[in-house]
Amino acid sequence: MDQWEHWSFLFYTAMKIINLGIFAHIDAGKTTLTEQILHLAGAIRSVGSIEDGTTESDSLDIEAERGISILSSLMQFELQTNDSKIKINLLDTPGHLDFRNQVESVLDSIDVAIVVLDGSRGVESQTVLIHKELQDKKISEIFFINKLDRNPENLSEAIISIEDILGKSPCVLFHEDENYVIWQNPEKFSDREHLDLFEWNDELSTEYLEHPSKIYDISQRGLFQGIVTQKLTPVLGGSAYFGKGVIEIMNLISQLDFPIPIALDGNELIVSKRMIHSELGKLTFARALKPFRKNSLAHIKNKSIPINQIYNLFGDKAKEVLSVEVGDMFASPDLNILEPARPIIDSPFAVIVEPDLSEDRNELWESMSSIVWEDPSYRMDLDPESGSFCLWGQGELHLEIFRDRLLKKFHKKFTYGELKVARYERSKIMEKQIVFEHTAFGNKHSSGKISATLRDTAGFSKLIAFEVSLPEKIQNVVTTGFHEALSRGNYHLEVLGLECLVHSFEPPEADSDQSIILLKIAVVSGIRSALSEKTDIIGPISDLEILVDDIHLGSTLSLLQKRNAQIIEILKKNSSNSMVLARAGTENLLGFSGALRNMTKGTGISYQRNSFNPEKYNVLNERQAR
Ligand SMILES: Nc1nc2c(ncn2[C@@H]2O[C@H](COP(=O)(O)OP(=O)(O)OP(=O)(O)O)[C@@H](O)[C@H]2O)c(=O)[nH]1
Ligand SMILES: [Mg+2]
Image (cartoon, rainbow, N blue to C red):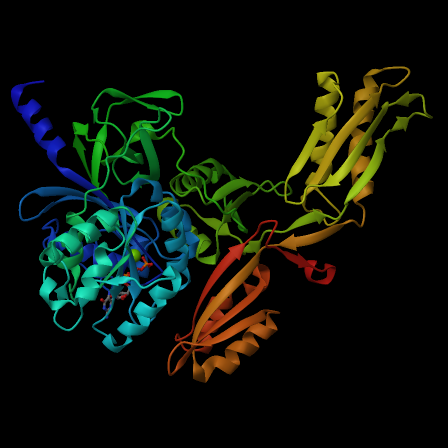
């Protein structure tokens, strides 16, 4: 290391690093706020807009065209404060539930979250979702009530909605009219407001009792420490669009001192997300839990990975650097072998994709695979009946976006089939003793006899267990037979929720080559006949949240009725809008959001949360199932 490099490395070490995530319900203004923060830091010359498709973080063509975020993006930049420079790693995340995986995968890498609210809507369903996740993961959060340029009179309602989810009063740190914030203009706030910022801490409270005149200084320390330790949930506000409240939130964040993360269980990195970079190809993002220099080794999941390339990212722009500090984020192709956090929800929507010319099959598979690699909440396999490519995704928008992205990657013709919702069969067998035996050629050849118990797994799993020790060949054939039997049930769908416990095996009197084949037939046909008429067809279920003006409320309810939805609650949102909460089989809701938009001339908006797990699924009757 030469002298300069040594000093620059030391200088770099001294810089504070803050990993900041921005989260919200769809359209609250995350990307607009991101753009203003970048501008404030001097990282961009002018503020881009969603309407013109010119923001840094929505850098995919499709994001710019549609005006929504699809992938989370990382912007790394320096922020000059009064006395020092801070490195900010800013993650702007998508709000639409179909891209939830992009949110989940970055949560473990951040120090602090800004949760943005649309001021006229207050807390919405995904605000609740993200707030719970941040709480579970003990991540500090700061609420930002946005769009106050539009309906500032809704501010108090928005604050009450935050109070509802916190179960206590939030610390409102600003006075909207005059742009005052408590740590900068302490004299403009009441003693009560100051006390709220440090009463959670005994030491600070005692200090105040001894030196009441130091209240402003003590409340400031209480505020900063309270945020870092998640004792306080502060609220700021403004207008991202007009850049109001942005300096204040960044000033607050820059004064927070988060603990330096440490390597856990020998893992020196936290893998967050993946990206297909326009020039560098596949890149994986990670947070470093120790400093790395180029060409050093990273230890993670019992692997030693040589880190030969380290990139800093600014949206889709990558810059190679020589080192990465502890706590900092970086991207590298060397980490591509590592998996980011798996999606927590299975992908319940499917579409069949086929090239028009069979010679393009490999190329199509590769183009699809690269999109799936970047967003692992897609899944791809071969349709067992047609051999076509089957693509699974989180929802209608998720698969629509896939098609648009594929069109930009794969320039040959292909067919993108109709969207289908996943269906399975759920075994209704509670417990059944069974003997598997099959004979052939006038009983000359026999499989031998297996005695077993079939049992409900109380979930969606398929399990086979052996109480006796059997030769490997026998055990394998019984296991394969069990899975083959469950691969196609009474309605030709995969069967879930059954366990087979094997008690004993009586070999055939005359063992022959045929015996092993007969044993498999015995298991497959034995399980199939046990399941005969003993399965339900099941599919995912969706919770709907529909925001509609009162003029269209009646027609929205009848639209829901036509789709067999159960209305759970109708809530008055404000003087002219209502929120309908409903539940329906996901399959019944295909095309619903489009139909609602047409019927309400664009004013009705629906959010759909699909669930498919043992607690939440939809049983379809045979008539629906055809
Ligand atoms: N009036 C007003 N409009 C805003 C403000 N902030 C954002 N918007 C508008 O709200 C819309 C959504 O803004 P985005 O920044 O894309 O919201 P987002 O939260 O990033 O959306 P997704 O990433 O798609 O979930 C755009 O039309 C913005 O121009 C604001 O402070 N005031
Ligand atoms: Mg966005």
